Length: 193
Image 1 (cartoon, rainbow, N blue to C red):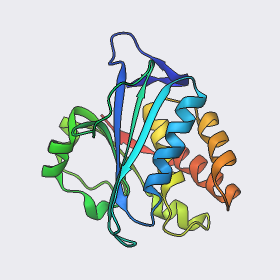
Image 2: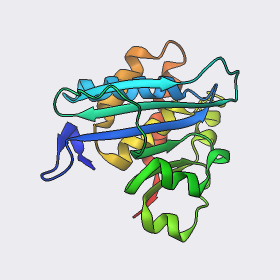
Image 3: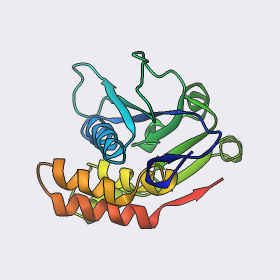
Image 4: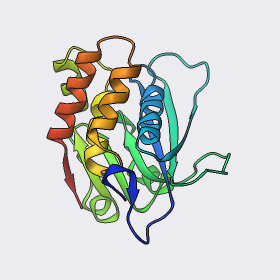
């Protein structure tokens, strides 16, 4: 993992690869862009891209972020991420996670976080009821800022302040609601490992 405020701990990898997986309409692509920009604000070098076709709302969507201290030369997809942020618990397939996330990687799950003991042994797992938080704050099913608040707390890769600044500067509407959702999720995250 990274240390808080954009600094890498000694001996850790010089690049982290993150996969966001959700459904159309949940804010998956926007979340990857917000995280990349917040990393840039903290002095890191991000790369953000997404994969989706002409699917309609509710179809599976994947977005990716790479974060490093130096220029990123890779221009390929991320096969096995270091971190996986799962926007929709209906997409939780423990066998598939093993193919998508490196061992000892990090998982952030939206929902109850009902997962096996094996999953908890293999990965560091954080859970947040992002949908409840988003609805409570008047955002409906758009869970991106809530999940980002939880992700920042789980990883300490960047500061909450950097995330909130980017949300404030880039979210086109309901800015106060998105800021409140990110802050609440930051406080309510539960994790194991």
